[in-house]
Length: 270
Image: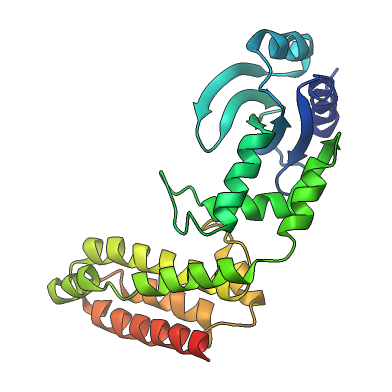
């Protein structure tokens, strides 16, 4: 008998929540509808007093073997993504990521203090963890850990916003690589330098709009709803990229880029 993905996920979460160490469980993004195979994966965040031992996790997950096409425990032990288990549910990759409560609170405190203003380690955005936690769909919350975090992150701290804005606007002043790429009409070098510039531009823009920068996904969707932005911001960013994709358009692309960054700085000054 086959079961809907949501039914299997709920059963999995129910079993994990019985572990004494587990305080809270949440799923990033929308819980319903869950993605189908090929549409995306499912990320489940599990917050614990202590990370459960491997044997204990096996004892809870192994009885569901008939409902899971694949399962691998302790697949990774990354600094930013906790202790990761993998299960395949109806063709949908599902990640179970375990974190300690104390570690999470310490990380959020440092991020909100502005200690990590930029991306780290292969495009991990610390500020994106705030975005995820603010919008996380709570599945289990024994002592209101996740609900209290969501409440804390509901209002974007003004001091954090100012730190991020200043950091990224200052980074936009470094145009040496862009100018060299323009002079050489080197499309690939220009693309590399422009990607770095756009990253700083977006992070400053999101901070101005008091929105935690989630990642580079769905950027145009966010920009469309922003009140604070250069005129026709999304359309012009696309034009910058389009013109920079061939050598004859690089100079025009860079001129448009300079106009946009100048506008962004003027908007911040007021």
